[in-house]
Length: 499
View 1 (tube, rainbow, N blue to C red):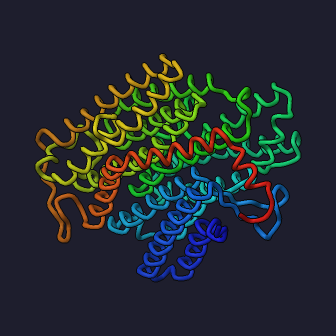
View 2 (cartoon, rainbow, N blue to C red):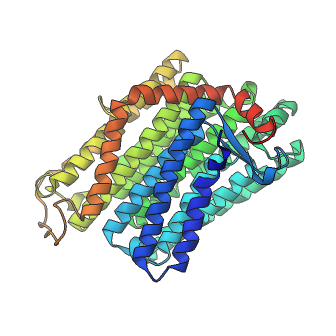
View 3 (cartoon, rainbow, N blue to C red):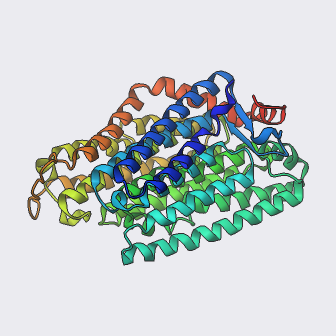
């Protein structure tokens, strides 16, 4: 197996970020470097996915120092799936940003900071120890601070301060958790922790499990730790909001999945707590969305609601439940990216994202209407959308575990999500617009060509996800089985040299 590929999703964007700084005065060169780096990341991630699906786990020991003493980078099926999905969305959103010709594209710092964000996201998925997960989070969050306030508007800075403070609190809790873990076990390597944590007393194990849920729950936007999200995301530039909505909270969910399934034995897994948190997160997210008039704030609350579905599947702690989460998390990333890109097109076309002030787009911009309809149906979980397949898998896993209360919440939330999507459709696409926005030269009736192409790609991927739902779910099942039976991961990391 070629372990040399493992660190490349981190190294390539970082090298490209350095080069974009050097060529900061040449915008075209910056764009070419950024697009080339992320295209390479997509290709590398696909190659890794093919490799790990054949061989289970691929790892690399940095500097030849074997785990648990050295720094280990590990890619299993879940890591590879998340790498492919995230790198693809980062590339599409970058193309969208280039087409938008806004502050996110024209600012000299956008390309290098965006590439650092990409490296941080990839590092979160491939790191094999908890301290490097902390470093990856900080790399990602430091970049997100800059991107969130790009443009320097007062509302951006105000919302960005909330985001910074909450993230710093979460980081302080994370480093405290790492110190306690190291003091208790003498290691921060995840595979080694998986062998040593079961030796601790049940109370200590439970405490660590809950502490890590709290730490990553802030980053994932779980109830009641989500309050920063709807205020922070809508104020950022459109492409930045789209990539935040798609990836940042999902990295938090990934960390919860990885730590809860790998580090803790079944008797210490917090299934009941996660089911309760998942149900509350779903409910609060959709109820918050129903109360909004601004499209971006409405969609931001739906980010929270969809995170609840993922925690619901994880809380079952069954192969079926975790497999459904893996399938659903990819689907949600596609849909959320699509919806926020559409929101950017609506804002550019109508001059506002307030639902009450927009109307008639089904006639003045039918392309935008089509681009919205596909992910809206998917978010609501209506057949034959990818959202239906994901929610059906989650509900089926819940039925197998006889978790009727959380199933009821999930179904009611789906109905309310459909209602909120109908609210957007009725407000934005029907009715009479206040004024017909003129079409600028070089635009379609949906927006600048690159913005439309990028949004169309996410729609096409969402449709392809339905068409190939069978083989994709089989891959998700293999990933779910790996997560619930982590012995292969542990043996691959601790079994010797590079593999």
